[in-house]
Image 1: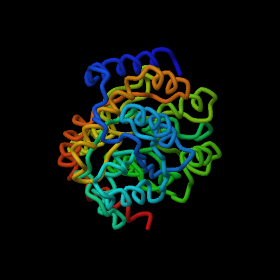
Image 2 (image 1 turned 135 degrees about the horizontal axis):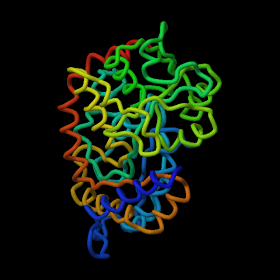
Image 3 (image 1 turned 135 degrees about the vertical axis):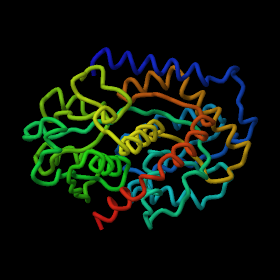
Length: 339
């Protein structure tokens, strides 16, 4: 990871923490969680980055709530939908919460997926741990070297996918906005599996986080062709952002996706969660994000930390969902294409 990108991330972290740091050292839980066990559902792979973030935060949430333990439980399946359905029906007593990619939940709901049993606008949002730009990459030995090459392919662009997560839906929206044929191949187990498929040439490319791909780009295994963010990556200024090249009415949909991705890795609880539990957890997650030991451990693990408070994320969810209604036909078509 180059210095300029790391500096940008750390600078944003300082600003984010300054915006929502809670003064004082007293526990906001007021004893609500003292000696109790909080179950943190992660509807993703046990070995994936989402679980690594959850395990990073868990001990500090316990520390600042007074809980005996934050017990992490993986309930993977359906691109995060299975575990989120489980949370939807839990008691709103604050004893069970979840952590995953919030955009995945919104997009799955907008797609009309029959697997979705929840309403993402009704969850109680507790805080964001991190977000980062996404990037569209191709295999290092692939003949495709730019997004224009993708648009000019005489065949569909083949994407190995781990399921209906935010990358699945985002790529479908990009294909519609940029007018290229897309073939999504599902059945892969996690990011590492899809990455190997692209490197081996079993697929053309995928969407993923910049931090995941930078080492692979450096050694020639992958090649970036498009950033999905508000601006270009500072270390790869020749790679355009999607917002630069999408024009007309389709641009609003891409903008909605970029806004959605800003929520990314977040904590949330069941609808109508106990107000005391909500206040305690929002306070604890904010304090955890500001804890120097957590920050040091996150940096050691290579985990970007760009936090945001629960109130901000709660306000954002409704705005994003309302602005994304026009994406429904594209998302439904993407879902139908893999059935």
